[in-house]
Image 1 (tube, rainbow, N blue to C red):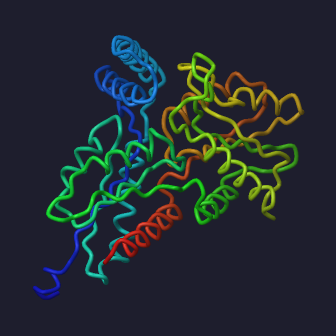
Image 2 (image 1 turned 120 degrees about the vertical axis):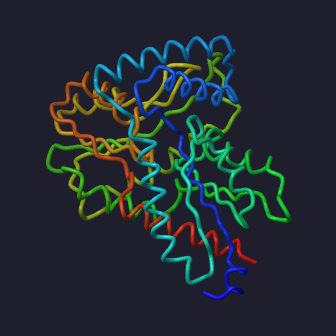
Length: 333
């Protein structure tokens, strides 16, 4: 490559942004993660700082005890780094012929490296893409990134970061899910599939509808569209496909049915074989593993299998690479 080509080469930063979870049973690491999570939630909910502090202390102790007793370590941050590494390899093959130097980073809302720090670190790049590593758009996922982008001052004429989101309505992602699901699932007569999403508030403590963007409509549309696609797919042999939510117990009334409620309903119908697929997450973590398994353990369903999230699968990496390449092309002058 000659000097002129090097001068013309554009530098692009692709930042995969996940929620972030503590990677050890350390009290301080878990305390910090919970503190940042609650501060994040306090942007849309009324969570007094003293309450945030107490909850962080209690949660830090609880996680240390639980994680140590069960020898559990959250894989979410590790999976996000693997997703970034795999995406880097695929984008290198796509972008180099177009004189584009692309660098893929992993960043998090609640654990280091924080997304704000990576955005500052890459501020001299010609283009920054903030990829929301959640299929559902709401105020605390893509909304947070859009807000961060709007607060960035363009450097030397370069534009503010571009947020890549809207995965919940992406037909190509739906195809990836279908091709991923059936080889992993154990469908058959008398079996059911439960698609789980991260739940959200539907009413606050006063019984009012939340004023912030909860992502409820996006979840409902993604769930119903994916459910219909599964039922219509010739590979499907599940007797039932249901949607459930992994909820928290703070702030008011959350989405229904919960996973526990969905499993109870399936059991009452005589279904004893259930696969659970957390389609509302791009990576496994404490909610899809520990919390979901706790609800499943209390169920009377005889056989329950947890299918891995899409995680660092090749097909998902290919999908992301195509998505990023298209965004880069659309942002080029």
